[in-house]
Structures are given as C-alpha cells and as structure tokens.
Length: 166
Image 1 (cartoon, rainbow, N blue to C red):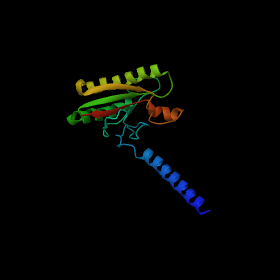
Image 2: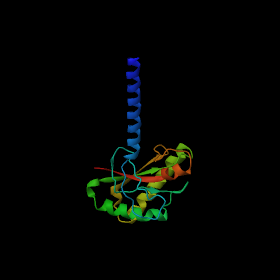
Image 3: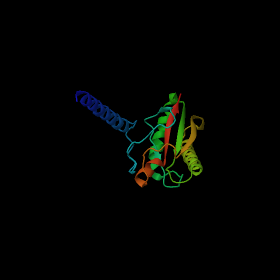
Image 4: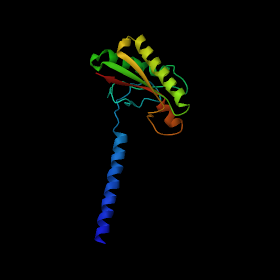
C-alpha cells in the first residue's frame, strides 16, 4: 500500500508540474504594449516565427479575410514601427513575416502571406525605411498565433510580424 501511495503522489506531482509549465508558456510570450490605434487588435501581440531575435517594440499588424491591403487601423502602428526601425540600425535587416488563417489551400495561403508581407514592406519604404533593411517571408497558415477554428482565432492569425537579425 505504501508503494502505491508514493507512485500516486509522484504521478500527481508530475501532472501538476506539467500543467504549470503549460500555463506558464502561454502567458509568458514576448509582448509589448501596443500603441493606441482604436483597433480591436490593441493587445500588443507579436510573436517570433523564424528563430531570429524578436523585436518586441515592433507590433504586429492584422489583415481582413482574404485581403492584403493595409488597414487604416494598422497605419499608426506601422508609422511607429518605421520610426523604431530607423532609430535602431543595430537590428540589421528586419524580416516581415506574412501569416494567414487556416482557410484556403497551403499554396494560396503562402502566396497571400507573401502579398501581406510585401505590402507592409512597401508601406514602410514609403515612410522612409530603406528597402535594404527589410526582407519578407511568408509562413502562410503554418504558424498560427492563436489555435482555433473560428473567427476569434482566425483574426489574430491574419497578420504580419517582425523579427531582426544582426
């Protein structure tokens, strides 16, 4: 009876530790306060998808379904991002990552993610960021920010994020 009790406690302890580790990883993501843009996306979400250094002062921007045009609520965020990029030459090349929600084929979403990243790059260039400091990559639907199969998740997955490499 004593041995069973020890194994039971060990199993309970291991399950609790795994549960706490799982909770910790979801709440400790790299985030910074988003500039006020009166957008439903003012949550400061910004992830890193490529393994490069996450630049936490650069905020993600979001897109409408099946669209790659820059939304009006994203323009203040991109202006702030442009200022930050221009003021931090040590970041080297900044990568703009295009992402999509899970709807559509893999090929379609890769192309849409590419268009989104390119639109963000072009907008930053119009704000004075040298094109040589920017590169684009599309992850399509392969790196969702939020897991789920409805609009409450999809709206956060239609995005462009930023990373830097020195």
